[in-house]
Amino acid sequence: AIVSEPGSTAVPVLHCVTPSSEPLLPEGSSARLYLAHLDAEQELLALEDCQSVFALDVRGIGKSASLNGKPNNGNPNSDYLHPFGREYFIEVTAKMLGDSFLGGKIRDVLATLALLRSAGYHDLTLHGRGLGGLLAAYAAALAPLPITKIILQNTPRSFLELLQRNFIACPQSYLVPGLLTVGDLPDLYQCLRQNYALEILDPVLDLQS
Image (cartoon, rainbow, N blue to C red; front, side, top):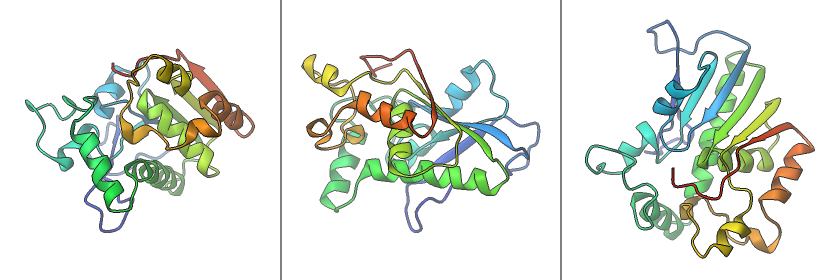
């Protein structure tokens, strides 16, 4: 577990494959931080090469989801993409309190990168899949990150394309208010290319899987 906000009950969870049973970060200088779509533990084990990979459950998904309420049928992600599931109600509650659930997720990413950097990892790749890819793009656009490369996998090509389908298959908490009045995801990706080595793999129109 990582403390990204003092006093917050939303705790991001970092996973890694290591031969050690100690709850410590393994030593190294080069690694990849994988931002999961829905469940970091399952997705980490599904990667072809999961060595030197840290996988993060930001608040609301995977191991962190159980902190936001009782999972349906024992599955913390069973209603995650439902239009009015737990994610929706946490998001609107945060808005009523003057906060941003998306902002909290991004803080989780920034805190984890800072932790890895302080542990000696100076050659870092940020790899986001699906919803995690959106987080990676947002985080990299907001602040200079201690990373050398960004991989966006299965992320949307364009929010405008999603909108033109009459149904946006993306949780409200990942949508930036007013974004389409100033640009779209292709513009964001172009900005990232100016500062990082950017690789986009298999862009999608459907974030439901």
